[in-house]
Amino acid sequence: MFTPKTLSFLKSLKRNNKREWFHARKDQFEAHCRAPMVAVIERLAVDMRAFAPEMVADPKVSLFRQYRDTRFSADKTPIKTNVAATFPNRTLGRMNGAGLYFEVGPDYVWMGGGAYQPDGSQLHLIREHIVTDYKRFDALVKAPAFKKIGGLKGDSLTRVPRGFDKDHKAGPYLMRKQFLGFREEPGSFATSGTFYQELLGTFRALAPLVQFLNEPLVAGQSPSRKAHILDE
Image (cartoon, rainbow, N blue to C red; front, side, top):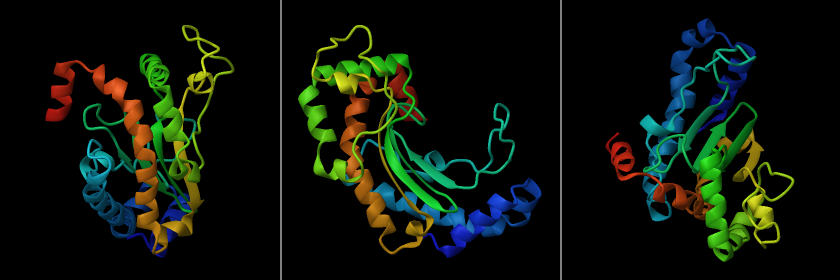
């Protein structure tokens, strides 16, 4: 899948982040970066059926564009210097709700999942779900496989949000604005013989969290919205 040529290309791209440079070497990008990423996504499409059948693994949906949107960014470099893929819930759709994600950069690998930027209404639904099913949520974030990748991470408030019992035992979870699990490795990790199995194992450990977070969001979708997403 990924090889030292993947990392070499991404390092060169970081040093020469110009459209002209990238266009002149597009065939190298396709061979050493995009093709291995597509191969990983297609293999995950088969293997994830065993533990996360509700998640989409499809190059047309999962693969991120390589060109950056610089309109509202201080960083005007035009090309992303990593290759990345997302795996969304098929009912909620891309970039909505909790999902799985990984990226390979010139000197790092990031793999993880959860709810990164839930809006206010989604965050409220997730918090209500935690209160309702506290024991299950507490058990899944304390599961050995989940703790092995670093446990629950993400930004938090300094107090339990208004509308929730500040003395509830779920208080520390209710203060969270993000619900994430992830691990970071050096870039060479992507070229190791164990990379794919480690990625698959990480996604398997994260799947119960992602499924829990999405349950109230899927339930809150209108039937017409669900039908629209499923037909896309």
